[in-house]
Length: 401
Ligand code: ADP
Ligand code: MG
Image (cartoon, rainbow, N blue to C red; front, top):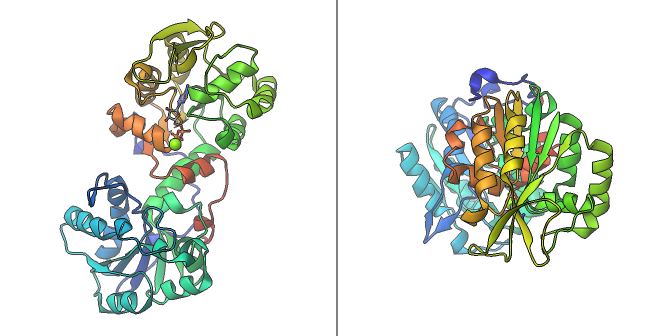
């Protein structure tokens, strides 16, 4: 298992909470508390837990910790079902302390609550997206947020690819540094990809090629091998000239797939056998066949055992492994084998292992392997943009070291 002893070269060049003196200061911390709710309660607190190291660090310095986040898509309106109130209860239980709550993130309510909060105390502000200025990156909203604090900390990696008032705008108005989660995410997703331990193996799957073209390009540039599965593989398989029946295929990406096959064939691995179904349902009939043998009316749902074995072999002795996108329709148990077995192989590879992407992370957790992965990203879209080699606006706005 790749542990913390196996860190890649450390080149994170932004100031963090460790570089500032927050003693007695008011610190506005943008966290990513965009968590799922069920019946008015937090149903998965992963992102809340991920923010705790930064909160504890600031609390230990006796800073006044003022937390803000968005939750869901209230589209600039006050929508009670998107209130962060359940999050404050969850956070209070996790930290075993009381958490103040302000019913608004800017204006008189937020100002009164933040000036009343004492050093060592924690205040959570209501959903930033209750104001249209958040997503518009409105300078006036950023200014109002900035009046609440002396220092700004961005720990919301999951929203760092968005230039919003509470992620980017406010960072220009206060001394602004990265939180510990942000630092960790960038180190793994950025530096591990830029300066990986070789052999560097990337595993790409998921539904579609189109949203991940730039990820494929960037990883083909950096990785020693790119192993492809999932719906994305179907378009490559069709581009190889095979019949794919009813499979999910993106015909407008066929030309790109052909070019990649021509240019990078040696580094691009594709399935040689597949699991097919006669319908897109959990109960569908299934068969394992070589690629190219899809009967009319059938569709590709997973990679086959021969492909799993070949990909597993590629993982032996790997230095760094990055995984994004399930190998098949893992939501249906009959088509989850490829994803589960590859997840197992990744966990056992001994490499520095990094998993990003909403469904990929769900698959790793479902397989019970999360503890054996070096870094599981808390950000879906932001993780993909890192894998594309892009700069995230929420990160770029922070102070350089
Ligand atoms: P991530 O969230 O990890 O980035 P994506 O959102 O790109 O991954 O894709 C995940 C989805 O891809 C899953 O819901 C899965 O069912 C689907 N998928 C994987 N393989 C196939 C396939 N062969 N046909 C159709 N859908 C697939
Ligand atoms: Mg997804």
